[in-house]
Image (cartoon, rainbow, N blue to C red; front, side):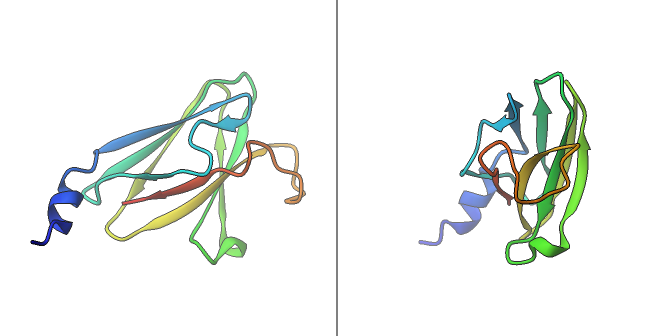
Length: 109
């Protein structure tokens, strides 16, 4: 019996990844939401802004950085069969070798 469609239908419409002290509460864990307009919210509980870097697996050189404001939130919509990795970085640090938050994780549908 094929349960693939059933499993996808039970995925949540949204999920929240909380950043506290520069660390994601989902570090190393893939967060999965429904492909039907599913959203992943990045919530910053710190009084410091961060850069949120997103990229497709295998294409980190083609990443996009977004500002995650202090005590702010950024939402990312995930479409069918999309997957991205993310990393939390200091705003003032443009040297990719120095990272905070243990790396991040993945978001997908």
